[in-house]
Image (tube, rainbow, N blue to C red; front, side, top):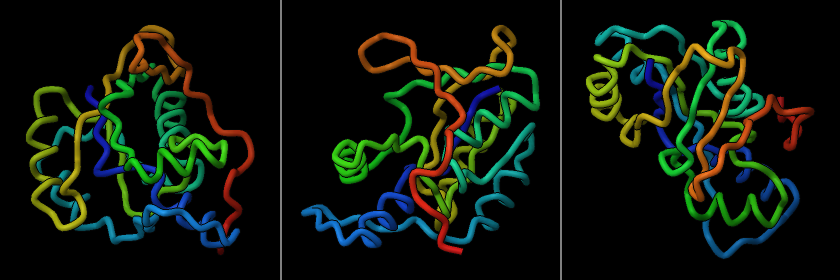
Length: 171
């Protein structure tokens, strides 16, 4: 399978933390809160979806660890393919948090049949809130339950299930 995310990750959590703590950043941080049904329906209409989750609590890291653990597979991510806005990267570095572990409120992550993945991405991109959909990784059989990431410098990083919540819940 291919792993698809429907847009940049970390926006909501970083924007919320900055606002809550009164942190002023030069770059605008904006929540990604958005309805996901139109994008989900477009993806489902294509077919080939084997797993789908919203990466709210615990962000992308939590969602993918849940999928890998419950499905008995490993997920390999390509760091350079994961969309993270520059403003979110910079703020995350300053705050000491991982944007992969930060809440997303208007995104979907899915494991999709590799033959249908390009078509699923295109279907998502035709929707209002899925314009930045992309393939960020693959599903493998070896090392079940693990989420691993090939880093931009050529290493491998284990993406663990987040412990606690870097950003407290609002509701």
